[in-house]
Length: 131
Image (cartoon, rainbow, N blue to C red; front, side, top):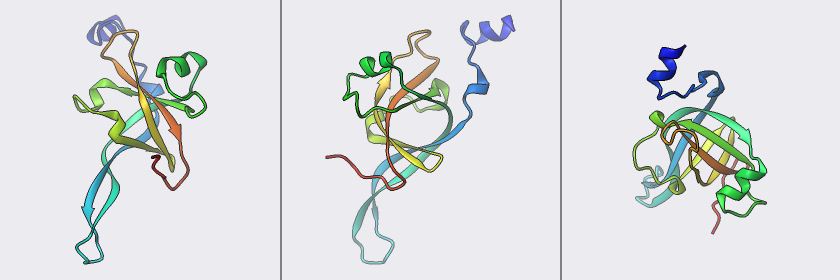
């Protein structure tokens, strides 16, 4: 166990908690499939990850600096599972048939580069963009 902790920079990554399959989706403009040549905007899955999904605490509400009534969940994703330099505000998450709008990332207060915590607002089965 000590060798595993040293390999991960002294932090136990707790692999069992990352048990929710999540699709990270990005909004893209694509050509319509009806042959009209029109362009439509849709979300396309960029990459899948396994994440820890938790209801937010009061501390997380304050840390996210967003409208507290809108934030409902947080997703914790391993830092090594995501591309470098990602702008999370261009993405949404799909987990268990529910879409989540990403309010913003929260910093990793333990090790810096072990995981990314995303404060999210839950949507419904059909996503509606906010203005």
